[in-house]
Image: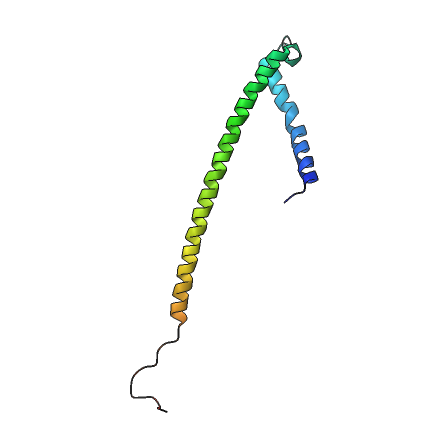
Length: 111
């Protein structure tokens, strides 16, 4: 597990790597001739755009949350199956390692 300062540095490095290209792509798509742009939007337009982005983020987070829940459930099921297999193998091993009973034939020494 990484420390909080390491996480901060990792997150900032990733943001610094990704953010300029993402912003440039958005400018090319939404403001190719430079006549629009974020600074030309009203505060209300910016808030509306931010709300729309937050709605998208909410759905992304919900999808990740559902996938994590599914993985945890699958993990629990696999652990339970593994425990059954391990228990079954241990039971079989215990049976095969049990001492064999003495033969009841007359060919042995008696005390």
